Image (cartoon, rainbow, N blue to C red; front, side):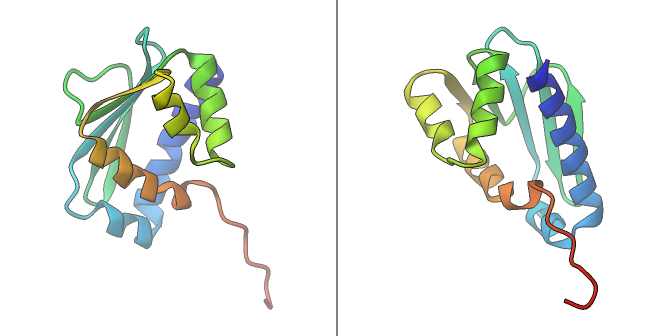
Length: 129
Protein backbone atom coordinates (compact mmCIF):
# COMPACT_ATOMS: atom_id res chain seq x y z
CA UNK A 1 0.00 0.00 0.00
CA UNK A 2 2.80 2.44 0.85
CA UNK A 3 4.62 1.79 -2.44
CA UNK A 4 1.39 2.44 -4.35
CA UNK A 5 1.00 5.74 -2.49
CA UNK A 6 4.62 6.73 -3.17
CA UNK A 7 4.09 6.11 -6.89
CA UNK A 8 0.92 8.19 -6.88
CA UNK A 9 2.54 11.11 -5.05
CA UNK A 10 5.63 10.87 -7.28
CA UNK A 11 3.39 11.23 -10.33
CA UNK A 12 1.69 14.28 -8.85
CA UNK A 13 5.03 15.86 -7.99
CA UNK A 14 6.55 15.22 -11.43
CA UNK A 15 3.51 16.70 -13.19
CA UNK A 16 3.57 19.72 -10.87
CA UNK A 17 7.28 20.29 -11.54
CA UNK A 18 6.76 20.06 -15.30
CA UNK A 19 4.06 22.71 -15.00
CA UNK A 20 5.65 25.06 -12.45
CA UNK A 21 9.44 24.68 -12.44
CA UNK A 22 11.40 26.15 -15.36
CA UNK A 23 14.62 24.31 -14.46
CA UNK A 24 12.77 20.99 -14.38
CA UNK A 25 11.08 21.74 -17.72
CA UNK A 26 14.52 22.43 -19.19
CA UNK A 27 15.52 18.87 -18.23
CA UNK A 28 12.55 17.57 -20.23
CA UNK A 29 13.63 19.23 -23.47
CA UNK A 30 14.17 16.72 -26.28
CA UNK A 31 12.99 13.85 -24.07
CA UNK A 32 10.53 11.13 -24.91
CA UNK A 33 11.05 8.59 -22.13
CA UNK A 34 8.52 6.14 -20.81
CA UNK A 35 9.69 4.90 -17.40
CA UNK A 36 7.84 2.18 -15.56
CA UNK A 37 8.08 1.34 -11.85
CA UNK A 38 6.59 -1.94 -10.70
CA UNK A 39 6.98 -4.98 -8.52
CA UNK A 40 8.09 -8.28 -10.07
CA UNK A 41 4.53 -9.54 -9.54
CA UNK A 42 3.26 -6.64 -11.65
CA UNK A 43 1.27 -4.71 -9.07
CA UNK A 44 1.47 -2.07 -7.92
CA UNK A 45 2.81 -0.47 -11.08
CA UNK A 46 2.86 3.02 -12.57
CA UNK A 47 4.47 4.48 -15.64
CA UNK A 48 5.69 8.01 -16.26
CA UNK A 49 5.94 9.51 -19.74
CA UNK A 50 8.48 12.35 -19.85
CA UNK A 51 8.02 14.68 -22.82
CA UNK A 52 9.06 18.27 -23.47
CA UNK A 53 7.21 20.47 -20.96
CA UNK A 54 5.08 17.68 -19.49
CA UNK A 55 5.00 14.46 -17.52
CA UNK A 56 2.14 12.01 -17.70
CA UNK A 57 1.66 9.45 -14.91
CA UNK A 58 -0.64 6.45 -15.32
CA UNK A 59 -1.30 3.46 -13.09
CA UNK A 60 -0.74 -0.03 -14.46
CA UNK A 61 1.76 -1.69 -16.76
CA UNK A 62 2.74 -0.19 -20.11
CA UNK A 63 3.39 -2.68 -22.94
CA UNK A 64 6.55 -0.96 -24.24
CA UNK A 65 8.40 1.20 -21.70
CA UNK A 66 11.76 2.76 -22.53
CA UNK A 67 13.06 1.59 -19.16
CA UNK A 68 11.42 -0.46 -16.43
CA UNK A 69 12.37 -0.91 -12.77
CA UNK A 70 11.05 -4.11 -11.21
CA UNK A 71 11.35 -4.35 -7.43
CA UNK A 72 11.27 -7.67 -5.57
CA UNK A 73 8.03 -6.67 -3.82
CA UNK A 74 6.16 -3.57 -2.63
CA UNK A 75 7.66 -3.60 0.88
CA UNK A 76 11.20 -3.78 -0.51
CA UNK A 77 10.43 -1.03 -3.03
CA UNK A 78 9.15 1.29 -0.30
CA UNK A 79 12.13 0.57 1.96
CA UNK A 80 14.58 1.19 -0.90
CA UNK A 81 12.96 4.46 -1.93
CA UNK A 82 12.96 5.61 1.68
CA UNK A 83 16.64 4.67 2.08
CA UNK A 84 17.58 6.31 -1.24
CA UNK A 85 16.87 9.72 0.27
CA UNK A 86 19.88 9.27 2.57
CA UNK A 87 21.91 6.68 0.64
CA UNK A 88 21.98 6.98 -3.15
CA UNK A 89 23.71 3.60 -3.29
CA UNK A 90 20.47 1.89 -2.15
CA UNK A 91 19.44 1.31 -5.77
CA UNK A 92 22.86 -0.04 -6.74
CA UNK A 93 22.87 -2.40 -3.76
CA UNK A 94 19.40 -3.66 -4.70
CA UNK A 95 20.51 -4.29 -8.28
CA UNK A 96 23.63 -6.15 -7.12
CA UNK A 97 21.50 -8.34 -4.84
CA UNK A 98 19.01 -9.04 -7.65
CA UNK A 99 16.17 -7.37 -5.76
CA UNK A 100 15.82 -4.62 -8.38
CA UNK A 101 15.87 -5.45 -12.08
CA UNK A 102 16.24 -2.89 -14.84
CA UNK A 103 14.98 -3.63 -18.33
CA UNK A 104 15.46 -1.35 -21.31
CA UNK A 105 17.74 1.68 -21.58
CA UNK A 106 19.65 2.12 -18.28
CA UNK A 107 20.89 5.50 -19.52
CA UNK A 108 17.37 6.84 -19.09
CA UNK A 109 17.41 5.72 -15.46
CA UNK A 110 20.66 7.63 -14.98
CA UNK A 111 18.98 10.70 -16.53
CA UNK A 112 16.05 10.28 -14.12
CA UNK A 113 18.48 10.25 -11.18
CA UNK A 114 19.57 13.77 -12.19
CA UNK A 115 15.96 14.85 -11.56
CA UNK A 116 16.02 13.70 -7.93
CA UNK A 117 17.19 17.12 -6.73
CA UNK A 118 13.86 18.57 -7.92
CA UNK A 119 11.57 15.97 -6.39
CA UNK A 120 11.92 16.74 -2.69
CA UNK A 121 10.07 19.98 -1.94
CA UNK A 122 12.44 22.84 -1.13
CA UNK A 123 12.19 24.96 1.95
CA UNK A 124 10.15 28.13 1.61
CA UNK A 125 12.17 31.33 1.62
CA UNK A 126 11.27 33.57 4.48
CA UNK A 127 10.55 37.22 3.70
CA UNK A 128 13.51 39.49 4.26
CA UNK A 129 16.14 36.77 3.92
